[in-house]
Amino acid sequence: MTFQIAIDGPAGSGKSTMAKILSRKLNAIYLDTGAMYRTVGLKAVQSGIDTKDEKALADMMKNIDITIAFENEEQVIYLDGVNVNGNIRTAEISVAASNVAVFPVVRHKMVEMQRKIASCNNVVMDGRDIGTFVLQQANFKFFLTADAEERAKRRCLEMKEKKMDADYKSILEDIKYRDNNDSSRAFAPLKKADDAILIDTTFLNIDQVINKMMEYIDGKQSN
Ligand code: DC
Image 1: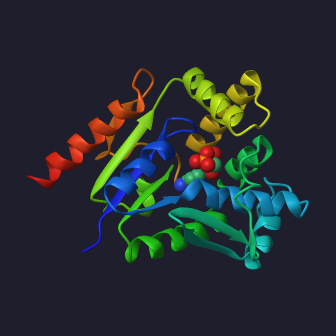
Image 2 (image 1 turned 135 degrees about the vertical axis):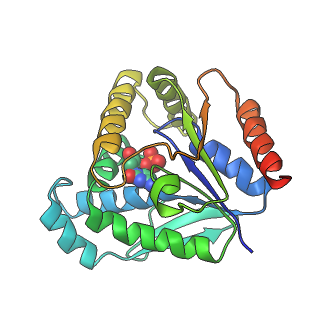
């Protein structure tokens, strides 16, 4: 039997950091679903398509080839045969991803791939709709949050560490735009599942968050 862990929450709440650690601890694959929407956003931008034009995106989705591989314990995402891991983390692509993710025609295709991967692997999956939609039967569900200012600070630091340009004010604006866009869309919005454990990470360090998550996992398993 395989198991599924769903981690949802807004940008910068610590999802990917926690998902990576948990996946190693529990011997599971870590699937970053945001990277998939980012890749669709990248394709739209590269093709000169307006990321709010549903009709044009629907046409684009007919011919998109996204492949996910796990190489050296890292997720590698290929767009039309090209590794795009290095191209999807810019501010422009963050906004493009949030825009294209509004449309069911985009989401259905991504969700199908996500469920397929989860059906034959132990998986820790992070995103916005994993607990509410993609893996409604997940064994463990978490919803991470943090103040927008703290999330922007973390994102800024992360980008600086990667030697990318990082401007706090524009990162905060981007985060607020995406919070609103991701939680107000009609289909599969960012939302805590009723049965997800809520963790506010604003004043917690990584170990403290992982301890809370592991306490819950261990407790539920021994029930
Ligand atoms: O997790 P991230 O910041 O890399 O995600 C980028 C965008 O993709 C996010 O603003 C909304 C969208 N997304 C989504 O709609 N559903 C998911 N499961 C994951 C991401």
